[in-house]
Length: 178
Length: 326
Image 1 (cartoon, each protein chain N blue to C red):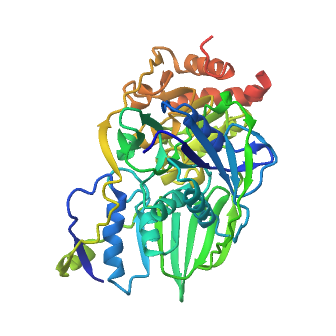
Image 2: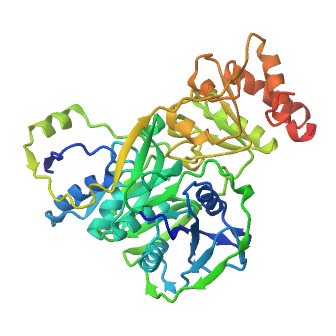
């Protein structure tokens, strides 16, 4: 296993295109890379498309909403969520996946020994380059905070039973307080 | 961006009942734009449509692209359309794979892309489109101005397409052939899961971790089924394995917009709120009067969720529940 660090040129927030450009440039220089994992969001700004853009730049297929992946001999078994259910795909590399959470599976945490061993390995510093003319396609003009404008009616200071009864009435009237 | 001859293309979907709700919603949002001049709305479809009375100006049918790679077929259709007509904006309204089609088309057209936008606008003074989109897990709203025609998709949590008026649309069968096959897939098996109807339901019950156990979630689900509601869960409920992943409500799961949303035992984390914010009415039950969910609810019941649930279930045991009463 290699540890590599890529120092980005400037601020990459809200710009998945730049992030994908930089990653694509590095991956193209690494012939052994056959699989790229991205988080579903994979950048600061919730754009949710870094992986897909990267795949398009590499001309690799991309699979989103992936919840499981296994390597069996020379192929990968990838499970992803689709509208109808779960799709189990048997793929040949290379490809990009964007992973999302799956039920009843929590992130495997590295043990102390593994963390200490990893810290001893040298870090390779990679040169970030390859920013193309995608840089100025849009501007982030403003960031605002959404404040709710609802006036909530509180039902409190009553016994639980009477609150449950009131809820039943509300549900019968589809939430209208009549 | 020139104001004259503006064309906005919407890559849509249709079935035997007509255009899909998400496609109609996208058309409605475009029609709400104040652009200071007429704008033509073109609809791009991969399959022919029977109906000619539609809420758009023209329909372009790309049914000569063969193969099983639907996202790639959509990208090809967008590429061809844009080469012919030079759209001012391209909107993807497919229910499946919009997250692949939007960036894919943007790279081909060398333009920007935005997924799940909350709204779109047009600044007449500077002749630029603007896009608003939830960021930082829904904690903030980013306002972008777009210099070149972009490819976007909407977050369809609020659908307001009822007021659309139909007219005779020009139907064009496009003479464009291509083959898009998923050669990189050796085998594909689909594990079908019974459609919950979360996105289309009028009444949704959302279970939060405050319910305390899988058994409680299952009991509430049975009650909800008899009450005619569809059940979803928060991320914590899914993480605990109390409900399957496809019933997740929130930014990374289903975004819902029912007439009535009953939230029991959820505190109101931002990504979850993003999933229910389109609901017409929200009733929330939580024992903490300061819970964040109450900032977004119409009616707040401050009580232990399990006690309220017991009250609901009691009714079901006595007389068959809400359906019997109604």
